[in-house]
Structures are given as structure tokens and as C-alpha cells.
Image 1 (tube, rainbow, N blue to C red):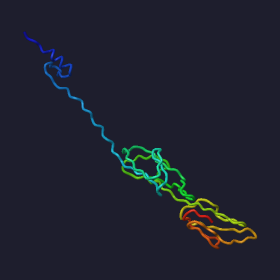
Image 2: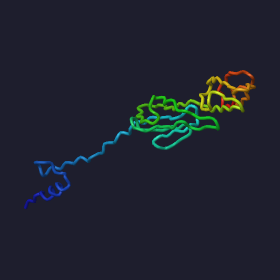
Image 3: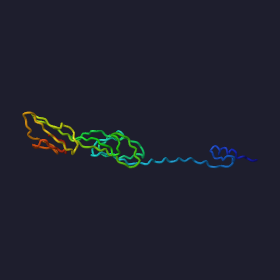
Image 4: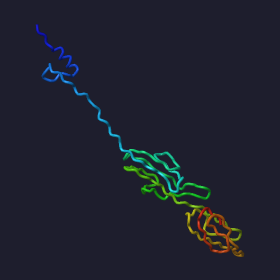
Length: 189
């Protein structure tokens, strides 16, 4: 008596091994393989200030020293700073610009290694004080570092100008009126 091998073929078919049109032929089913996802290219980004030590933020986190980041190429991030920023007594820092010409707070999307620098100008406070019987100009206020500032005393009627008594780098002490000072630090006249 002859037996058919159909049962074996059906069992093989259950495993996906039977080739179409020929139940007695067995073929292996290809095993699916996963395609690796490419790792995005990374860029190195440095964020800093000039002068150093000024405050800035990256993606909402505040820093006061240079920071280096590894970001995915083309990813978007926010860099920002605030202005003015206080320094030592009588010193402040006023934001001028970012090195990429962006606004004080802006997004960046670096596609290569890059550095973003927030630049500040240094200002010193000038305190002007007149003695009894007169007035002085200019008024007290912030002046840029290195600025030359003319100072003038105006005696009231019945008074005469005696001298300036200045303190601070670039101040003037002496009889000249008007005189000039150079803002090398906070100054009192």
C-alpha cells in the first residue's frame, strides 16, 4: 500500500516551508532582518561670554562659565543672556551682540562645530558731588569703560571754585575747571 506524504507537507506548510505549486518541495522562508537606524551626526558647540564670567542660558539652564555641548547635527536650541549684568560695586556689563548676530535671546541650529559668544561692554559708575555753593556737570551715571568725560564745576554767586577731589582709576584731583577724566573704573568727583 502506498502512503502519501501530504501530511508532512501540511506540517511543513504550517511552518511556511512549502513552495507554491509543489507540496512536496520544501524551501526555507527568509528570516526578516532589521535595518540599522543611522546615528545622527554630532556637532560640538561652545557657548561663552566676553568678558568671561557673565551669565547666559542654553535651553533654559543658566551658566556663568564657558560650556561645551554635543548636539545632533541640525537640532534646534535656544541661547540667551540678560542685560545689564552687575559686576563688582560700580561696575556693570551691557550686552552688545552675539557672535552670530542673533537677538539677545534666539534659537540656533548648528550644522557644524561652532562657538557662540555673547559680547558685553563694561561700564563704570561716575558719581558727581558738588560742595556747598555750586553745581557740577555731568550728572552721575554709567559711562563706558575708557570713555573720556569732561567735568565742569559752576560756583554759585558769592562762591568760587577751589578744586576737584577725585577717587578711582582715571579720576582727577586738582584746580583745573573744566577738567577731564578717563573711566578706568568707578569714579567719584
